[in-house]
Length: 200
Image 1 (cartoon, rainbow, N blue to C red):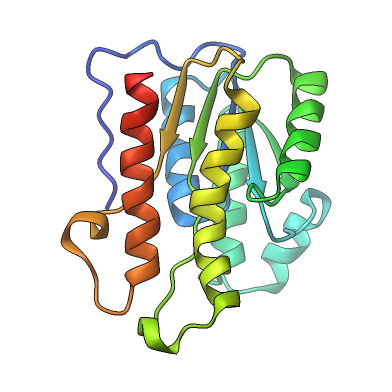
Image 2: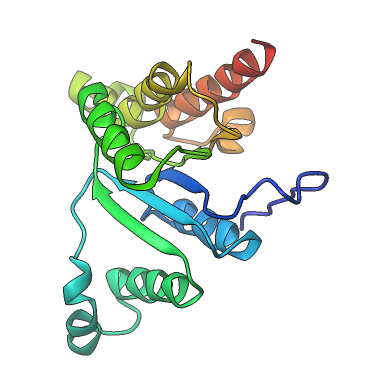
């Protein structure tokens, strides 16, 4: 369960604002999308996702042919609900850990929709093995989205004015989690990086 509090920041989501969510079609990403829509439905939400998703023109057919509890069906219904509230959605395939892809997509977003008001970095990969059983490729995969993604977002938006930048860490960065050493480490990095950004 994700509990969001914006006490003292009730106007943080601006009308006609453009907001990017990395890992936008993941569980946390969609929770944030719904939260933004509750604050102001007259916005554009850009969902960056490393993997391709079903084209919007095929959503209705997908829902007719697949069970309601299927993962993609659940996501499609959430997306359609957001649109029904008046939210403009832009879903695009982009690996936030790839700086060239990120630069290209953010340039398109600014060209199509205007200035970007806020960013939520919710991309991440959970690694469920003992550290001794993980090879270098798996290490790169698990650390790539959260750490390299955060660094890329910082580099792209360092000199651009945005209202907020949110990094989605996890409680495991403090408590730890068995078999999740790399995931815990990536979240610990986000904790420290967010502090560093606030101080600067």
